[in-house]
Amino acid sequence: MTTPPLSLQDFVLENQFADLPPHFHTHLSASPIDKPYLVAASAEVAAQLNLDRASLNSPEFLDYFSGNQILPGSEPLAAVYSGHQFGVWAGQLGDGRALLLGGRSHADQYLEIQLKGAGMTPYSRMGDGRAVLRSSIREFLCSEAMAALSIPTSRALCVIGSDQMVFRETPESSAVVARVAPSFVRFGSFEHWYYNDRMDDLRLLADYVIAQSYPELLAENNPYQALLSTVTTRTAELMAHWQAVGFMHGVMNTDNMSILGQTLDYGPFGFMEAYDEKHICNHTDQQGRYSYRMQPAIGNWNCQALAQALSPLIGSVDDTNAALSHYPAVYRQKGTELMHQKFGLKTDHEGDLDLFANFFTLLQSNHADFTLSFRHLSKLSNQKSTKDELVRDLFLDRDGLDLWLINYRARLAMEQSDEQTRQTSMLSVNPKYILRNYLAQVAIEKAQKKDFSEVRKLLNILENPYDEQVEHDGYAELPPDWAKHLEVSCSS
Image (cartoon, helix red, strand yellow):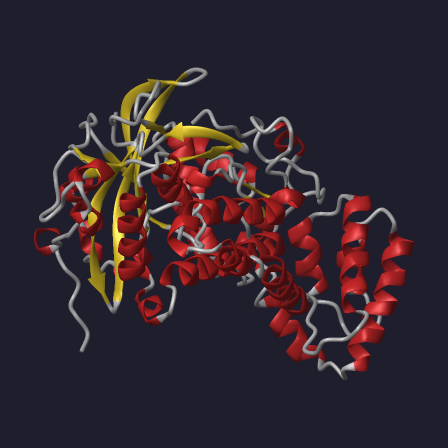
């Protein structure tokens, strides 16, 4: 039976994380913001929470999800954790500008709500606990864009802005993002207790995560080994998803890695445009540790850091290594599966990986647009036709591409590919619309002038990334020249 959507008065939360001992978190209320206003909200996330859509436009909604008022049942808290940042042990970190309000169950799914930018906490270090409008809009839009691309991710209910100013490189307006996920526990949450030699607390956290998020693991002979194995698998698959769509996280520190294998903490992220496997989307990452090509290896490195933290619970070194060892095979299997889908191939063949690699070599040498190359490839006929020009126009080395297309079509003929079926399948996995940096920048600049129409328009477009939406063709075009100078960093 369908449960009717709830009004805010009936939207009661529970905070399961609050049941952990006091040293796991600090209870505190958000710091109020002045005159909150709605920038944008996701009706889809509201539906997942079973929150009445009409509530999104109410003054109460602004107060509750800016942190100015406390929702019924909420126990706002900031969690402590530690982590490796850019490969270096950073010690204690924690929710420096985020508060976990609590969660609720609906349709057999438990979801927690966290306010990012809600003010200072004991873990803010030198920060002010606030988030700026520009980064909040980027996180909101990308969370929802990734969900529409079927990539595991935290979600975003809304962005609420304020004229209250904060200082980064220059004074900027502040904002709060209401983030939603089944859990916000990170790899660094486990590292915190391990490196502080608090093994009882390490076990408490592991038991909590298993009971809350992986109850099926309780039946395993060694639930802690099974936890590591499951998280390793999910992380390897997540990396394959990122690579397949050209997404770059930018700050893959262990404190930004979800224990659920979801994309978490959208900071200086980016989607690949002109293809360069060495591309660094985070201007702060001068050494390229988190470049596009490094992401799969860093995912593995982070799982090794988690394995180290969980090793006292797992027991033997052999059992720990066994849970960790399948990362390369899982990544390779998932990546191969996704590549077959992107290239429209239904069967596996010995030469497929070479065929894929040769296309990526062409992408690299021509710096062709990643998304448009696959989207136009999806529309090719099984025989040479005028549709070839859609792809050829993206490549300087047309002779090289033509040779590759001959081999690609021979491969299609080998499995007797049905043209219409293949095109439909490829168009369902190769998006037309992604959150390009310049699109986000245009929306941000309008929002800074209190015009939120572009943020909301982008949200609607990105919620259906595979649809043609011909009226929005301009949002799928190559970025303008001025966009080449856009940079994102950790400064937000």
